[in-house]
Length: 197
Ligand SMILES: Cc1ncc(C[n+]2csc(CCOP(=O)(O)OP(=O)(O)O)c2C)c(N)n1
Ligand SMILES: [Mg+2]
Image (cartoon, rainbow, N blue to C red; front, top):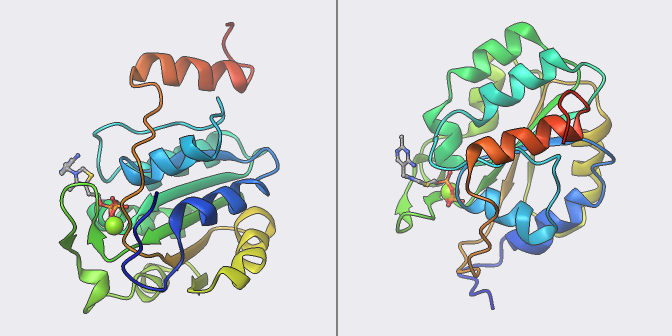
């Protein structure tokens, strides 16, 4: 059961609703909670789960987007993880892959490691930061009713696009996927048809 501390978006049902609309998009979830949210919504070999590596989700998604222009790529990460790899937004704006979307699940905290406060709850507006780096299309979502408009942006609008969803702090049960990086990467490549099972 999930314990909500505010009336913001509830992350598990919100992520599950969004992923229903991914229509073959490859997903790079940031470490910790976003990885668990994806797994809880239903495992897929098209999810390149992260374990431990903080700050690399957006740049990993950029590499994928450039390597596979035939696929839509979604980086689905946390505010803390995004802040750690914030410079990658400059390279994303510069390379401007049309198939890349980034969604930050922003609970304004380092949720997984004890809910320490991050900067997005006080001074930092990540959409303005993204715009400053040169990403022209951004969106902030605070209501469940905006999920459809967000899905249209993330999965259909010309990229690169950058969105922030303000989500509630929660105590969702752990849902931990496969941990072995070699296994995760292998099954991802198999799903892409570039390696044999
Ligand atoms: C380089 C590095 N520093 C710190 C950590 C520990 N760590 C793991 S998850 C996490 C917080 C992530 O916060 P956020 O991305 O906002 O996700 P949330 O759990 O809040 O959804 C931290 C600090 C790490 N794994 N790697
Ligand atoms: Mg967070």
